Image 1 (tube, rainbow, N blue to C red):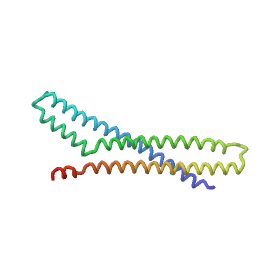
Image 2: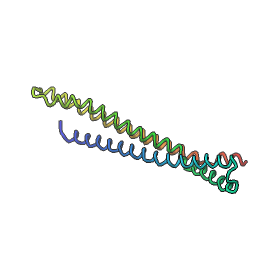
Image 3: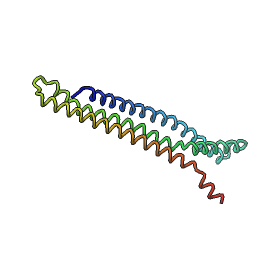
Image 4: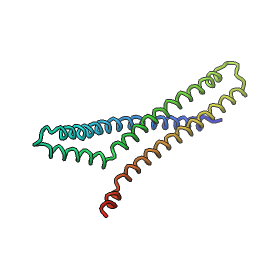
Length: 176
């Protein structure tokens, strides 16, 4: 057994863990930003509707109505709510993936490393421990890579659905 393949897979695992951390931070940051935008647009639409419905500021009702329509329009064309959900889901999923695999990896690796430190270790026991570590690292790398790929696929699917929502097919059908 050589050290080179082991160190390469360890680097790959570290890279994948960094990707999960980056994805987690990105997802949470974008979700926070989109949440602020969503609350702002909902406040304009809801608060403006309440002002118009109560009859206050009658001189401003047209301006308030336009502001409501603009808020609804911006929310619709940006697919803000759908993308907010997708980004928040991705951030939490990256976090879960990173934490669960880190815990599992460390929990399974610790006894193997302790076994290798034993002074009365036979060659066969050492080889078995190294083989188990290699297997653990390959499984961890595979699971992290597949998990990241699935999260990216889900984000891409969500983006495509948000883009599909921008179609004017319903408006065209209603006009005919």
